[in-house]
Image 1: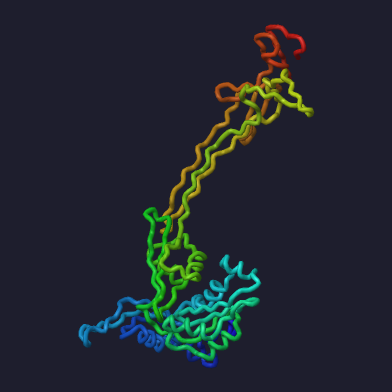
Image 2 (image 1 turned 120 degrees about the vertical axis):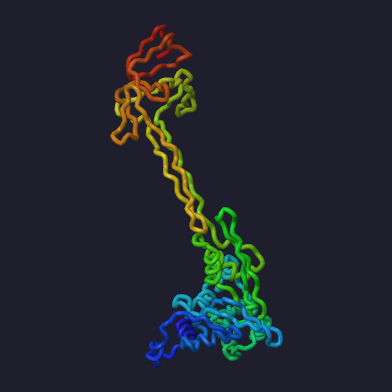
Length: 401
């Protein structure tokens, strides 16, 4: 059965009698008192004039049969018509979550030559579904008895045997509805929610459904998280994967906040050397000229000496309860001109105003046109290459420039 046909079957709509349905009730929810959940849903289906599979519910008060009729308490159930976008969530979840496309193990199976078939049974509000994945190569195929054993172990009392046999025979990997959902709320899969003290993480622990109980779906988990006060950071894919893999009794990260991020501080990116560290240079032949110490940093007019990298704004964070986490901006940095330098129009670049040497003094770059050497030009100074004027108070020794 194709997905479209299956959806139509689930809707159970009589398309030849649409006028009658359009004249249905104009209310969207009912509060029903009944002896059981099944009875409450049957009453709701009658009032809404629709199939039970199209109803959603919330148990407001759980009923009790009492003791020999004494102290009997009815179920109090809020019954609503399922939202349009949720009607097919059951089969779509089964079709996408359990087809192996989202799990690493399944991708490795697809590459294997021999893979056993796989049978899946899920109990949802819209009914009991099976999905049979075909075997590959010489892998073992799923049999009808395999599926019947699984169905019986899950406590499903009634199902369409002929539909099941056809599903096993065809093994299309598509979800197939084989029976109605019989409500057994006391046996349904349940979950608990644990929220961290800083409201940045929420974990869920899921229990396996007991015989005849309903499986949880992603929309059930998200709904429960929202009722617990969560509004942000839902990890839909992780939740879906956990439900797919039957991760029962294990803490699963279901929501995670976004931490705030402090902005980086501003800084100055110097384009010239501002220290007097000696750096010997090696030529193309691997020879080092020990007379070239590069103690003088020459610059020309208009050359970029430094660039201001502005501080960045912090990025606000958000908790899973949607509380904003403020973030600090980075500390700003100033780029101040020294003697012989000017700032660009935007104030972010420092330029040389004239030719000369770089002198870093009191945190600022200065450009000086006169280089004064208080002693001799020798091994201590190395060769001196300067674009401006040089005043040597001593002597220039042999072989020095």
